[in-house]
Each structure stands twice: as structure tokens, then as C-alpha cells.
Length: 464
Image (cartoon, rainbow, N blue to C red):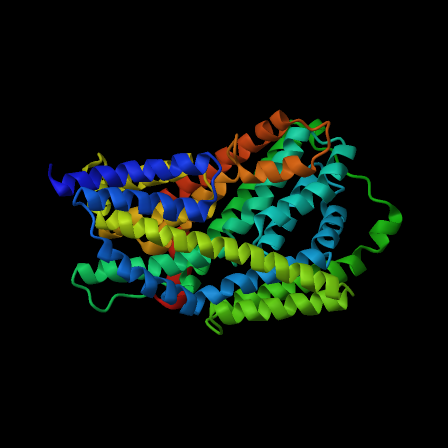
């Protein structure tokens, strides 16, 4: 039998085999590497894989460890962890609730605004959903909110950290797309390609993030008009109104200044994402100190949580490197290229298929699992079709954000289920998330129809 055909068959079986193993609950990084090594062994026995290909793994791992861009990941995670422990989220929710709460649907609007602010200052989905679930959900239920609407808006707002910069997902995708785009351009004869940076991706994600915030808020306004009983106004006491100015100054201004310092320095070209991340980490420490939350215990817990999260993501990345190498060397990339190029609809058909694949995988796999497995396989083919790499990265980010909300395995739903009161059923949480999944799909459709929503700002700032 032809070794090329054997390799292609093994690569396809390996892809679905890894998904099956992950669904069984085995550790992600070891599943990726272990299953890949198993199929590499079979390929070697059948003459479809050369074990000497593994020699390139060492340089790949060293490259990851020496990659200055990826240093931003633990710094941004640390910034989020310290802001969470400094009580910023709690103060923000209380203050925004007083600003919007006197309006029908105002409490829901405040949750959306706080979700966007936390996304731009922490970028940690789980922490945001849990914090808002603990603080906002009881208040919304006491105010008479429909549990479905309350849980849906909290889950959706909490996932904004996936798309609004600074996002760890965007950092990894920016680094991956930079290398993939350079390889694709050189293979097409362009030996001086325009670079794709994390800053480009941050700029590209800025308006789509605002678009999602606008869609969420529009939905809340529609609900307040058509079904006012589902989101009644909140009663604000005279004392709370009197203290509103002070609360805005102490609770809203500091995180806004930090967001402006971090994002402004990146988008303005003043600093790299790594440098801005260090500014954010120091800023989070200062805010914690000002609020007298910079204790040795909080600092230790923040550092441990940062180390755990960072280690988990990077070990997955290293395991995914084994999968990507084996898949490529057994001819899987050529198989994917032939398949995507043969789809009806040309480039649009290929894009829609890849987006649908990622959307479906979002039901069962984590975000980082998907980008480390699917993006190296599909992105080279799409970029060969002249798809803009920045637009592609943002589309993938919005798509994967949707995976946090899709029942039955959306991680955002699980986070909220863990802190929601017993009278809020799992079915209510699932039903509440569905309208926001529809809004996410609408956002993706708008980005396909109007790609300038993504590409305009990077072009304006960096001339890409």
C-alpha cells in the first residue's frame, strides 16, 4: 500500500482519536503528545513516518521558551489575578449597578459594562464569570429578574475576556499566525512579507469586542421594552445616590486608567504587548496596595494561580507541537489543503467549514485545545487563499468565545453553575445562554460581510 496514502489515513484517524481521548477526560497535554507518538510509531512501522522528524522538536521548545512575546501571557494573567483579589470587580459591579440600576434592564446593562471593563483589565473568563455570578446574580434575582435572562447576560459578559484585548488567546494566536503567515508568504515567493504581530491582532479585535458589547446591550434594551417584568428597575437609596460621585472616582476611574495605560500603549505603538503587560502587572499591584489588599497572602495566591494557569497553557502548547509535527509529516496538511480547496464556494466555503468545525469542537474541547490543534492545520491553507491573517485570528477568537456559551459543555455555563443558587436550574442557565449564542453568530456574520470592522484599525494604526 502507498505510504503516502497510509500517512494521510493515519493523520485523519489520529485527529479524531485525540478528540475521543480528550472527551474521555485524560489530561490534554499528555493526550496530545501520547496519541501523536502512538500514531507516529504505527506510521514508522508502516513506512509512513520517519522518527528523525522529532529532531526538530527541541528547537521548537527552545523557541517557545525564548519567545519574548509569550512573556506577556503570565504577566497579563498575574494582572488579572491581582485585580480580582483587590476587590476591583466587586466595587465596579456595585457602582455600575447604582448608575444604571434605576432603569428597566439597568442591572443587566451594568453587568455587560463591567464584563467589558474586566475583560479589558483581566482577560480571565473563569474569574469574571464566577465573580459576577457571586455578586450580580443574587442582586438580579432579588430585583425580580428572570433567572434565564440574568444567567445568560452574566455568562455572555464574562466571556468578553476572550476577544477584548488584552486576551491570552489573542497573544497565542498572534504568535502562531505570525509564523504561519511568514511561511505561507515565503512559499508563495514573497520573501519580504508584512509581519503579523500581537499588536495587530489586539487592534483588529478592538471594534469586534465593542460590537459584541453593543449587541448584548441592544438585547437587554429590547427585553426591557418587550418584557419589562423580566428585568425590572432597581431601587437606589438617597444615600447611595449621594455617594455615587465618590464611588465613580474610587471604583471606576482606577481600572479605566489602567486599561488606557495597557491598551493605549499597545495600540499607540508606544510599547510592545510584553512591555504593556509589565505595566499592567505593576499597575494591578499599585491598585491592590491603594485598596490595602496587597497582603502577603494575596500576593502568594496570585502568583501561585498565575503559575498554575501559565504552566497548564504552555504544557498544552508543547504537547500540541508533537501533534502538529506528526500530522504534518504524515501528509495530513496536504490532505486538509486538498479538502478545503475542493469545497464548494471557494474561499468563503473553506472559511465557513473551518468556522463550523471550530464551533462544533467548542462543544467538547477547551479554547486552547482547539487553537493548538486546528489552527496550525487549517490556517496555512486559508492564508494561501489570500485570507487576511488578522481577520482570520479575530474570527477564530469570536468563534471560540461562542464555545464558552454553547450547551451542554460551555465552560462559562459550568463556572456559573458552580456558584448559582439552587433555585436556578441548569436548564435555566442553558436556556439563558442561547440568545447570546445567537448574538455571537450574528456578530460573526457581520464580520464576514464587513471585514473592515476588523481590518480598519490595524491598517490605520500600522499601515498593514
